[in-house]
Amino acid sequence: MDFRLVDLSADEIAAQLAVVEPLTESVRALIDAVIRTEVPDDDLDDARRRIDAVTASLRAAQKPGSYGVPFTRDFTGMPWGNAAVGVRNAIAPPLRVDHHDDGTATARVRLGAAYEGPAGLVHGGISAMLLDQMLGEAASVGNGTPCFTGTLTVKYLRPTPLGDVDLRARTTGSEGRKVFVRAELCDADGPTVTAEGIMVSPRNLPSPDQIAKLRAATAADHDA
Ligand SMILES: CCCCCCCC/C=C\CCCCCCCC(=O)SCCNC(=O)CCNC(=O)[C@H](O)C(C)(C)COP(=O)(O)OP(=O)(O)OC[C@H]1O[C@@H](n2cnc3c(N)ncnc32)[C@H](O)[C@@H]1OP(=O)(O)O
Image (cartoon, rainbow, N blue to C red; front, top):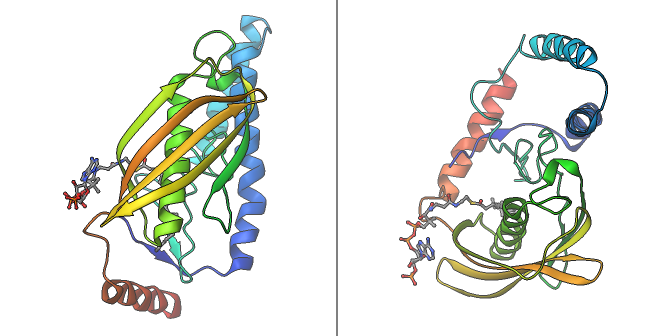
């Protein structure tokens, strides 16, 4: 697991987010516009050329591989490329998950044309992904260590119309490194999809010693 540490203050992160979130939001709007536009084909060709030029300008300086999940010194994760919650990922709705004192995690999100499966309805894989993220977050925050999905069981009770949905997850128990979690996705009339997960905190997470070494290396990079 990538446990890269970055030495960023809360102010520096806020400054990055102030630029990055509007950019990602613009790309989300672009995705929606491409799906729903009815302009003539010539205009589509012209749009493609202009989009390709923007893409080339962004590739002028490019991180190798994926974004990863850097952790700040106070161990705040920055899952900015994450497919469900990533603030730099235009395919993420994005889900913004709130964690509550009673151990539940909740989120409300609007799923538009980009998340369609059957006509007018949310794609089942998207529902499963969002529920998986909710299960993972509830388990990880409750357990104090990142938990991966071991087993995910999803039950589709009835179709979910595109639009606003509410998600809720709660831990129901734990056994060793396993955490048992339940979640539901609801439209205005109640649950449409439910999920049960066995989330496992992997055995090979870095030890406190390894984390201290990573922190020291980050500080040395910063001072250099
Ligand atoms: C710095 C602290 C920060 C804290 C706060 C955090 C804030 C939020 C942070 C982060 C949020 C993250 C949100 C993520 C959300 C998205 C979730 C995903 O999409 S995860 C990607 C998809 N999942 C995978 O790719 C897993 C692939 N599989 C594996 O990596 C391993 O198989 C793993 C970790 C599941 C288990 O590997 P082993 O080697 O650790 O497990 P063994 O030692 O064999 O088993 C331990 C116990 O778990 C059970 N177990 C193992 N695999 C299982 C499975 N697949 N299903 C059910 N149980 C399983 C076993 O039976 C055993 O149970 P017995 O102790 O005997 O009772």
